[in-house]
Length: 86
Image (cartoon, rainbow, N blue to C red):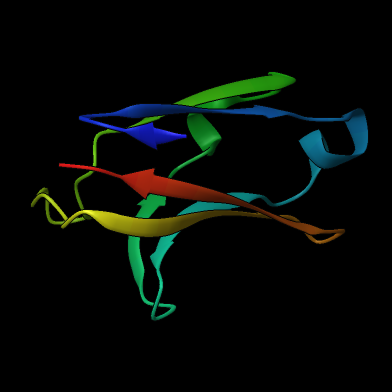
């Protein structure tokens, strides 16, 4: 599903994931982390809705291409393929 200029990443969490450490990051096809998200602001919410505007951590726009959203917890790693079309 291509997106431009932003996309919403929705994560549904189980009770055991709520208590542990969790993070979401966007990586390019070279495996370089370009954007990280702070999930502590969501507290104990079982559904997280994160907006990615196609910018890196420095606030600069990234180029068109394939990116991967990677959600990590101590129990598992889930990934989602994203296609940014500018």
